[in-house]
Length: 537
Image (cartoon, rainbow, N blue to C red; front, side, top):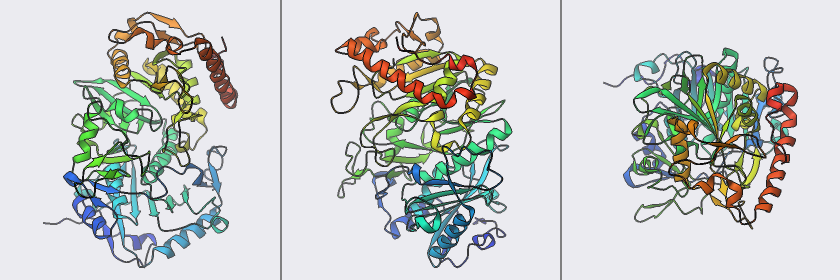
């Protein structure tokens, strides 16, 4: 017996979205794949995967994201890092997008953002593309069929890749637009096929709402020890730093892949799925993620496939360096059923240091942890953002600046409070380069993942706390001198460089970058955090 798949009192017409062609509510995965194939949106791969090309947009478009400047958010949005849009311009954008949609086929998913029922958002996603609907069904949390009959969304996302914005008329920058209106509780997305914009919009909402409730929102992954739910680890890091790979460790239970909240009692996943980088994915180093590339329903974005054999080539970047796979979290064998865990025992801040200066692991004090959290130093990895073709050093506040609508100090202070309250151990882990820098002319190579895993295991099982440490002369944090199973030389990056003097020169340059970047936060933090700054040795 089929069940009602939508609240009969809350269809699109009830929301003022009328005149569309056929509308499909809350289709399941097989039906969405059938629709996507019928519409020519992609191809079926081995095992029932679905392969798509996102076209020109193979990554986020952060400069095309806007927050509507309404009275309710005027004093709480960080306008230095969030581009404003006039309410009247949004209204024109909304009217023009709805006019564009008339007569066309659309797909609707009613979903939850957040595993904690007390903190979640009920979100409706209206998609022009069937595969976008499949993607967001993977990435957010799926209500039970019985819950759909009464589902009423808190927020609505409308995504029309075929709609091109008019910068003069709609108050945006280009034909691509992502516009968030907190007053109307709506997100409009136009002219991008990159599916990640759907979930990042939900993250931005939760990152704004949760601090008002005293909950710390985090761009992070999380896991806990198998058999010990109290041994929770949180992994901060931007896309491409290893956040997904390192948290999906077969020796630990995965809570979530990309975004979490930290309340007084729990760490909870925002999502119901994972969005993993596929390029050069290793079946040996990342077997759990690799297995999803042959599972029914997995969406593979910009992955090259042989048209005859349907075999995929994860080393081929001709479509994009930022090739991605999206799948439900239960595709990972050791995933948590509840996607909830107690407050963390360890915090890991991941950075892909393109200069090859930072050690593979360092221990942070609470003040140093807040300093590095606010700094958010890493490398933008090729393809993650439009226009980035080589690794490029950057500072992304809170390891997720594009998704943090409030002032960074709000999140930094929340983190410091949570660390102090829970007695959390904090670590900075460099998954970037060693032996020199990245890119043209660099002598460095990517940090071996086996080294990173060995150091993480030592940090998480507590044995690393008993190691001998040295004080880094530039950054002041503690660096282990030796760790069982790890070549000692790699723990001291200066010794890995062909010319130690060149290391010192680059290190001083990186210190200056940190200091210059942190100047924007100095008036917002305590003296102890300011004193955690690196110094030229």
